[in-house]
Length: 260
Image 1 (cartoon, one colour):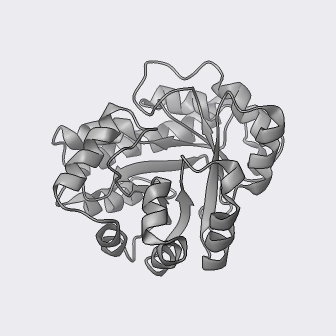
Image 2 (tube, rainbow, N blue to C red):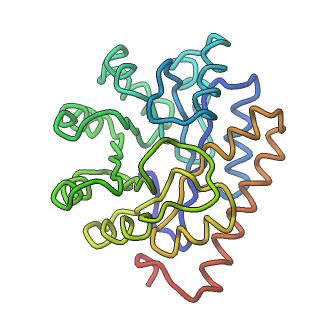
């Protein structure tokens, strides 16, 4: 299980596996800062859904000779649940059965494959479920209502709500359709709905959980890592998000649906 019963908004920070020699220290720093789980990117050479920051992080990791197997092994025994994210070509190359078994053996609880079409995901869904891995599905503001309902029904662990059309990356404001998308999903599932893409500040984090159950933060963290910020300082930024989520929801007076 990625998220156990929670009494606070979920915080899922991201790290590109292998991006530095000390990248696993980021996982520990995130956990110490109050992350509920950590998303670990298995870098791919053509990350089409990712913006320039995570593309750069993936390039750096691959240039250092990192591999998916090494990343998975390096985080075995992490202090929080882990969610792997990667592209389907890597899944196909590794073999779905082997990859999911490797993930489970190292303590991963979930898997995100953003370029896998819903119509072609049944096999990986079954393989992941058999290995005890939650296959997390994504929905965007352009997802039609019928398809949105199917995503809400078939996703496991949580539903990843993409706050805007486009790639990952820091932005000055949340996508204009983020709240509506999160609301539409929460009406159709008891799973947590997490908003991602573009969340880069504590203020945006608080805004996001007015309609969602939590947030995913990636590019804002990887920008700091690529700029040479040490793990402890990146963890301090994650801690600022944690404080904002906790105090912001309480101050707002709104209690998320699974905590009422």
